[in-house]
Length: 302
Ligand code: NAD
Image (tube, rainbow, N blue to C red; front, side, top):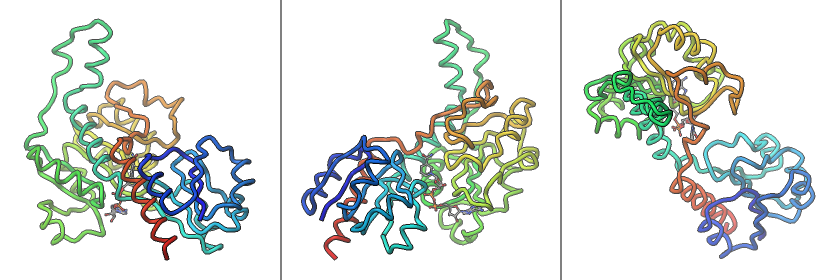
C-alpha cells in the first residue's frame, strides 16, 4: 500500500503509517504535480492546504482513502469521491477541547479587555480606568449548538460558575438537564445571555443565524463569540451593532472571507479577532494525525 502525505502532519501519525505502508511525504507538492502522481497511491492525507479536487480524484486510479487530518472536509470533493467509491475520513473529535479552550480564552479576553489593554500598554500608555472589565462569575452564557465543542465549553463554563443556556433544536430539555444546562429557544438565549458563543456548522439554516434582529434582542452589554464558521454571524449587522453600542463586543476566529482584509470590523476596539486558529494546538494536530493514521491502517488491514 502507498500513502502520500500532501500537507504537514504530526510525525507520530507518519511513523504509524510507515508500519503498514510505503509513505511519501510531499508537503510542498503543487496541484499539477498531485494530479500527475496520484495514480500511484492508495491513500492521500491532507490538512487544509491541499485541495483534493475532482481532477485529482479521477486521476487516482488506485485511490481508496482520502483522509483529512482535521475537522470538516471542505477541501475534498466528497461528491466525486463518493461516485468512485473512495472513502473520505476526517477527525472531527480531535480539536473539540482545543476549540473550546480558545472560545474560553476569547471570552476572558472580552470580559477583561485583555487584547486592547495589551495594545495600549505596548504603545506606551497606562490607561487603567479605560479597561474596567466584568466578572464571568454568575453571568449567563448562551451556547448555540451543544455538540462536541459546545459540550466542552459547558464543562469549562461551569468551572467559572456561569449559568448556561443552550439553543440546539437537536438536544432535548432532558439531555440538557443531564448536562446541567437549560435548553431554550433562540430568542430566550439572545435576551438573557451576557455572553453568546456559537458552535454550530455553517448550513443554509445557520447562515446569518445571528443578524440585525438577533443583535437587537441581545443585551447592549452582551458579547458574541464565533469560533465555528464565518457567515453564521452576519458581519455587516455585527459592524453596525458594535459601532452603535447595540451589543458590548465580539470575538471572531472565523470570517465570511478569510483573511478579512478590507473588513471595517478590524478598525473597532470592541472586536477581537484571531486568524482561524481555533484548532491550532500541538495536541489537536497530533490527535488529528493519529486518528486518521489509525483509520487508514484499519482500512488497509480490511
Ligand atoms: P458537532 O456536529 O459536534 O455539533 C454541532 C451542534 O450544532 C450539534 O449539536 C447540532 O445539533 C447543532 N446544530 C445544528 N444545526 C443547528 C441549528 N440550526 N441551530 C442550533 N444548533 C444546531 O460539531 P462540533 O465538532 O462541535 O463543531 C462545531 C463547529 O465548529 C463546526 O462548524 C466546525 O466547523 C467548527 N470548528 C471550527 C474550528 C476553528 O478552527 N475555529 C475548528 C473545529 C471546528
